[in-house]
Image (cartoon, rainbow, N blue to C red):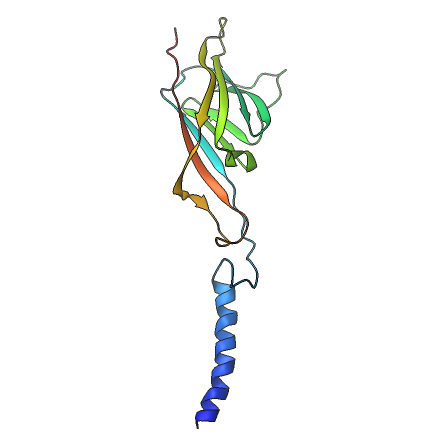
Length: 157
């Protein structure tokens, strides 16, 4: 009887491990990693809303971009980068660049005077512990971040 139970237990353990490897995401004891993807995002919130069109000139992770925000696109101007979106209350960066810890920002109004609201502001992008995502487990790639920064704007004239 005892031998028969031992023989039945072996296949049950193997079946349980196989089922766990299918149902449980992440690293499986060095056996391999699942391949769940994720995307980093960084959101910068302005101290106040910008009530008209403005230019956002930024540098992050060795990349730079100039974007027209809060205004209709201009026919002779290239579209804003896919990884950058902006509105009256701030901007968002998605993808690999959002994994950086800071962004350098120049923000000025789309007016005759090009009124500067932020000049070469180095915005720190903080991550809370909940903002670190490792969908495949702590020892597996990728690691993605949800970051947030705040930007104090100068008063508009």
